[in-house]
Image (cartoon, rainbow, N blue to C red; front, side, top):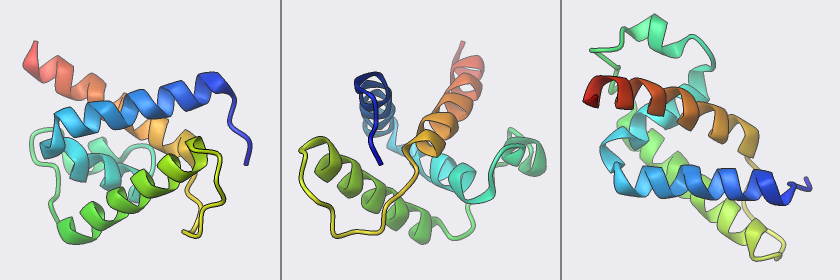
Length: 101
């Protein structure tokens, strides 16, 4: 999959946010698992922490894939959809910043 430079930048920015707020990483991974409407499903104040280990592993995998892709190498890992990552981070981030603000 060929990402535009803009998409690369967005995905990288999404990962930077996750590194600065690792407490929200599991939410983003779960959002990627469950898709849109996930926050409505679980309730904003009580985001499910089921399968947290799996979510964290998935995020490490996502990071690896994006790092390898950006580096221009062939990735040996199963590809992920960076658009889903960007979408998930954007949604979680708007909730996070809404709660923090």
